[in-house]
Image 1 (tube, rainbow, N blue to C red):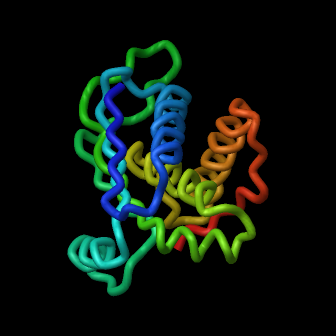
Image 2: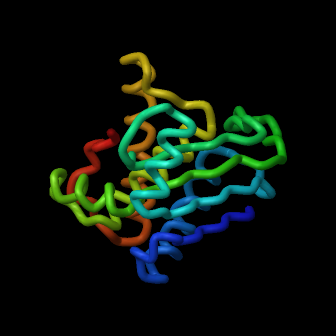
Length: 164
């Protein structure tokens, strides 16, 4: 898998960027995405996130996470080969994540991992516009994050979604 993690915000230490990359690899493996799929995770400051939020969603103010799918890859059903291609981009604003983490009672790093997981699921076609979709997506997001952190020996204080 080709996973690029870039921190244009200057917010996170290198070890957190490595953990984001490990999480993305884990999520893509668990979701049966082709091993040659490309994913870009970009961390930006509030001004950059607000510009993207206005341009793509026509909403003012910075948001926590945006996803930009490319080849509309979907998880491969068991028994089928996954399709190769470019998954897309996940853009996260660590400053917004820090505020949400404070409200939720967990670390900013955990909030960012939650947002990256959420963004990847959006790239894979999951949504939360309807209640049934929301329940499915958020349960999957919670399971992926908890199992990733458990495998690394890290408990997660509260994986309750704080997605704006």
